[in-house]
Amino acid sequence: MTRTHGSTSTFARSSRRPRFTLALTVLAVLALGACGTAKATGDDEAASTAAAAPAKPMGSLSSPALAEIQKHITQTCPAPGTPQEGPPNPRPAPPGEEPQAGTVDPVMPTAGPEVELNARDWCASNHHEQRVYVAVQELTDPTPAEVRSALNGLGYPDERIHGLKQSGATTQFFLDLRENGGRLCLAGSVGGEEPVVDKCVAPATGPFTAGRTQH
Image (tube, rainbow, N blue to C red; front, side):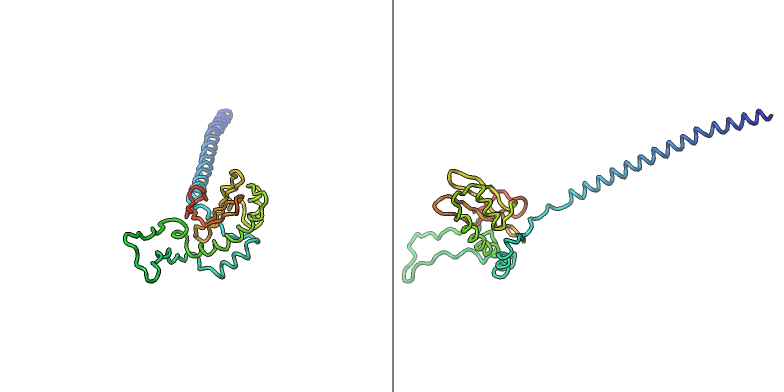
């Protein structure tokens, strides 16, 4: 009887052991599955957050070299977003003269800086144009590298300089001056008889593309 009892006890222990091992295995599988789910969920949430995040807007022009001109623009130009009063009216006939029959009034622009730049951008552009003109005018060898260096020296970082290319003795470039929701850019050419620096209109949103500017 003692032997039989001992055998039964041994069998009971051995029969419980697989059940215990099986339980541990099931728990381990569940735990791994939970970890995988948590990781996948975390990755999905991170991807969703990245997809939902808006594109980083173009930062303001805030280098130390631009501090003085930015202060001057703030003090003398209209507030950001101030609209233009409109393009100038057609030139009237001189006093004492009647408009000639069949005279066609000049066509008012429907696109370009006169129409699409707000008053703040138009005012700010005058200040930027002058300092850029003076800087590139002094270049004796206006290669793209020299033009970039001159613009960097004025405080304009590389990410604001676009379309630098040389054609013969002339180097062309664009400056992205968008900030505070504006659309201002400058289009420049140096190496001819004298530099040319003009206002242009950049896309309202998205990256700066020289091919999408308006003069």
